[in-house]
Image 1 (cartoon, one colour):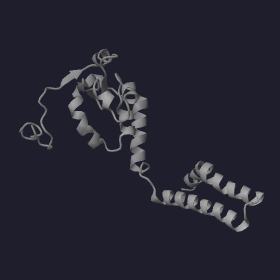
Image 2 (image 1 turned 90 degrees about the vertical axis):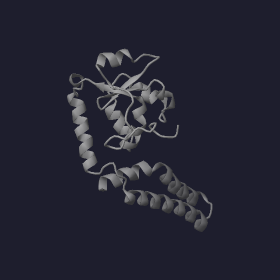
Image 3 (image 1 turned 60 degrees about the horizontal axis):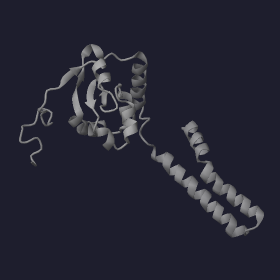
Image 4 (image 1 turned 60 degrees about the vertical axis):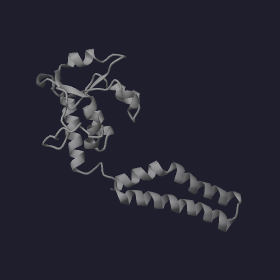
Length: 185
């Protein structure tokens, strides 16, 4: 206990060596092992037994179980930002890989993977600090305007309506401003 991989020397890439031999599977075998009692999942041509892990999955068992018996590569990449971090935890449930002849990718999947690669090269998944600063400034300005209208003009009907317009714009108008900023950027 407490020795990580029980004192075994790490492999060339620094990982602890696997103590079990990984098997080769076909899609038929993966689908046969996907029942209400057992769930197998394929990611990047690697087969994982998620039977027990599904209950512990941080995203919920329904999300991961939905992809049982299928190639979940694209969903996996969409839901997990740091793939290398997540794959460390997946070593424990890794049971093998698909046979080479079984790893054919559908043309539509290949198109989506190319689209994602293009979007990653364009940094479309990186957040824009400017965008969020403008969002916050917009919210604070309209909140201040709502308060200022009531403070300077009193609580009559007309100032109240203009004040509510400013607050409503903050609450409901965010999607509209989002579209304007995206169109301008």
